[in-house]
Length: 110
Image 1 (cartoon, rainbow, N blue to C red):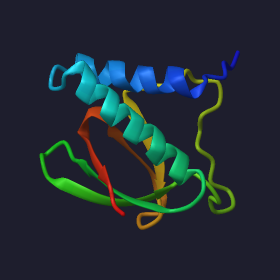
Image 2: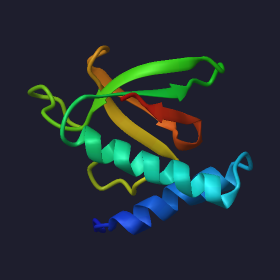
Image 3: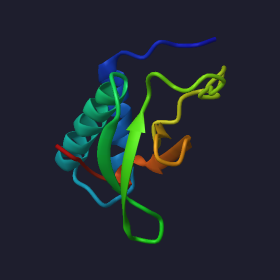
């Protein structure tokens, strides 16, 4: 059974995961969650440059998309429940799917 989450549920779920990490206040978690929502929305329309912190602490510049994937590439979602603690994207430089923890997101490049 696949449930269709509206955008408010998605944003609040991102904010909850960010807040539970213990690094952010609820206000800061909501701001970051709304930015993540905007990032996902932009990636559904094209390639977006953004930054996030890797596990080793260094910053990563990523060029990701969620639309117009090459032939034969699938996101592998299937019937798996969504994980709001992780954001998945297709990296156009590495030509593979990548992910990052939502609390490690830094910014969208303009």
